[in-house]
Structures are given as C-alpha cells and as structure tokens.
Image (cartoon, rainbow, N blue to C red):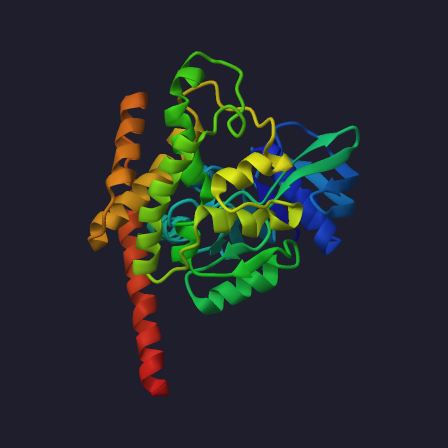
Length: 351
C-alpha cells in the first residue's frame, strides 16, 4: 500500500511530488479535481527529477499504507473524524502538527474507540509548488525540518519511515515541534498591522509593503516570550531568525536580523496577502499558535504580555474568541514533565 498525502490539492500535490521524487515510489494525493496518474518533471528549490503521482478523491475511503496530512491545524479533527478507521494503526505524519497536534489527535482516537495511528508531526508546511505546463514547479522547501512523535523510540521509527520520502526531516521532540511553527509568529502581526489593507480588500504583498520594522518588533516580542516557554519545557528555543536561516539558508537567505533576511531574500518577493480578515493568518495561527504559547506561559508562570496582546487584538478584530484548547495545553505540560523525569532518571542511573 502506498503513501497518501491528505488535504487540499494546493498543498498535497507538491508534497506528493517530492515524496515520489525522493523515494522512487508512486505516491497518491487527495484532490477534488480528477487529475488521474501523472508522470511529471519536478524542478525548483534545489530538486530535479521525475515523480509519479496519482490523484484520489477525498470523498472516498483511502487505502494507504501511511499518510501525510497537510492541512491547517483547525481542520485535523474534521479530516480524522470522517473516516478514522482508515488511519488506524498506520504511520501518520501531521505536516504541520499545529499546537500539540500529535498528542491531541491520539486522544481523539482514544475517545472514538479506534486503534491509534502512529502519529508524528513537523512544525510547518514542508513544500510549496504548483502543477503548470506539465511539470511541478517548487517554490518553497523547508530544510532541517524537526520531526517528533510521543516518544524517542516512536520518533526514530517515524524518521526511518518518512525520511525516505522527505530527507530534510531531522529528529526532535514535541515541545519543539508544537512551539516552533514560524507562521504562528509572523502571520498574526502581519494581519493585525495590515488590517486596514485586508479589510479594504487591497492587493498587497505581505513581505514587501506589508512588512516593516514595526511589524518585525511585534514578531520579535512574541517570539521572545515563546522561547522562554520552550526553554522552560525542555525544548530547543530557536529564534525566528534562526528558524528562517535553517529552513532557507541553502536557498540563499542571509542577514543579521529577521527584517534584513526577509527583505533580501528573493524567494519572499510578491507573496500576496489575505484580502479577508477571516483568514488562517488569524483563525489558525492564533488559536493553534499564539494563544497556545500564551496559555502555556501562564501555566508555567512566565511573562506573556505580548502574546496576550496579539491574541486579544485578534479576537477584537474578528469578533470572536481565539483561545487554545486547554486539553492541548495540559497534554504538552504532561509530555514535558514526563520527558524531564526520564532525563533525570537516566542521569541518576548513569551517576
């Protein structure tokens, strides 16, 4: 049984193309449009070769050996609840996992009484690209992408399985993956400080005219508070600058500040911004990012002034609540405490 990439075709097709290119296997992807089986050249982002990919309707049962779910975090429960049995016992990579996605998805399967998939997650979108003129042209590829599962043993197994499709993934932990989605740090400030443009439905580009030093200062402020939480819970607390350079340094990204790297990076030019305030910049990246970091900071007794400000202003703009799932917060705290106890126990035995 083959690997199946689940989500909207805009996201699934480039991921399937890279997976096929790397593994030499035929890879399937869900699409509302029947594209059939395609043997297509793949170029861009340092990759070149031929992929064999096949579309399948998301409305039929999927008989896959393993899955990658590439969808906004707010859509994960809807995707799994439609036919949970098709994922049972299978390796499932959440790309991205959102906020505690692997832990929370496992809990949902327990509640449904369905055997657990073997969940793992990465913190962000892996690839971007489009099918044009008979070829898949990639325009985004994140390198050195952290992958984690609920235990070190499960992480090793997930890395062994999915690494043959995605050689850019590296082993990590769920604190790092759940709290390192760079989109959750950049999209809400961009949306808040460009709200007039968005509400007026102007044509704008978020890394060009939408990104200014003031926007960067807000990003850095919430990133500083997030990193304190990551450190407190035992994860790896890279800055947004370090995350960007790790992902795109091989593509020529350079700079001493995040503002400098964005403004000098050709791959970030002409990215159209949203024209509706009710977009994933706020609806996904606040409850599955900013608000989660805020609630974790409060839970462990750390400052969350900037995180709270961004969450509250986002709620005012949209006119509804955007808090994170308390169950996800507690699941991450419990996971971090368990890992800490394991490290302490290992150190005691070694001593």
